[in-house]
Every structure is written in structure tokens, then in C-alpha cells.
Length: 111
Length: 113
Image 1 (cartoon, one colour):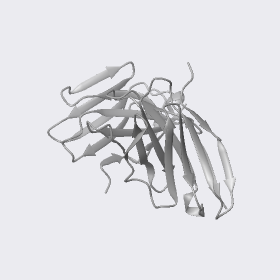
Image 2: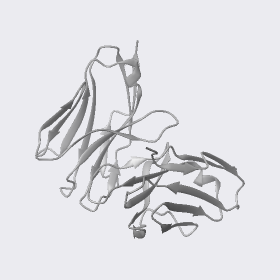
Image 3: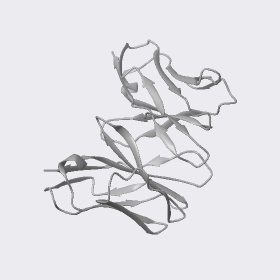
């Protein structure tokens, strides 16, 4: 059973466009929602994270939107660049530090 | 400041052989996690340790897999005997207890022929 459902599986965006990746969860015990970015041949690296008491968090071109009632959260990449091409994973953590990953979205930004 | 160190980076072995993957967490981190990544199943948590003690090994696929953390600076994941379906990238991650950011190593790509 997938604890965190992520979509789309792949995404192609023109340079300068907005990339949007969506995730949903069911377990209300999750209390921290990080997004990881993974380049080929590398381990996942924390990109941005949010707690459920906040509806939005922005860091540079990256924004997380969080809808607690709908149990959904999304990553928006503004002004997408070719260097943003990577696989993005949403995740959710319980207080016990159990990290559940989504299935990943492969983003390709076309110059 | 060194991150999480994993060795080897690549391992090719034949079915039935024993495989040992190694991890050195970031100094001062008290929790260590082993993950497996495949195209079919994505990232899966195998086991995690807190203060060198295994806390949750429910993700370990079967008895062929075992993990140890003899001290705060070293952990191993062993597969014996290995099977082709074990082929994957294995990641180690560490974190300071009670914080939320896990730092991942570069991974070990295992191929079992």
C-alpha cells in the first residue's frame, strides 16, 4: 500500500514554464512533508519541506502548497530551468522519523 | 564537511554470493537508514537505527538481508545469498535524532547476475 501517492509520473515543461507535481496521503499522523530532488547517479537531496500548520512555503523558485483538509500537497517550480531536470520525490514523515516516499516524478525542462 | 559515505559505489556479483554494503553516516548523526531504490518499487525503507540500535526492520524483504551498526560511525547491509531480484541502488541516509532532514549518501548500485 502506497502511503504517499504522487503524480504525474513524468513531466515535460518548456524553459520558463511552471512545473507542478502533486501528492496525496491518508495517514493523519504525518507531521512533516519534505520534497527531495534526485539527479541521475546521486542520492536524493532535500529541496524544501513544510509542516501541516502552514498552507504555503516558498524558497526561491520552489513553492509547496499544502491543503490539510484535502490531505494533499504540491510542489510548484516557477520559471523552470533545464538544470531543474531531475526526479522529484514527495515524502511524509511520522514522529518516529519513518519516511515514506512517493513514487517520483521525472521532470524534463526543454530549453 | 563530508556527507554520508557509501562503499562500494558499484557492485557486480553472481547469484548466490554474499554481498556487503557499507555506510559511514555524518558525524554526530544518531539515526541511520537503509533504503532500496528500483524502477518498479521506487524508494523503500529497509531498516533504520537509532543510537546504533535497530528500531524498525519491517522493510527488510527476507531473512537473506541483515543489517548491523556496531558503532556510531559504521553500518553494513548484508545480503546472503544474493539473487538477481536484489539488483537495485541501495542508499544509506543519516539524521540527527528529533530533526527531520535525512541526508542521503550517493548509493551503491548492486547488480546480481
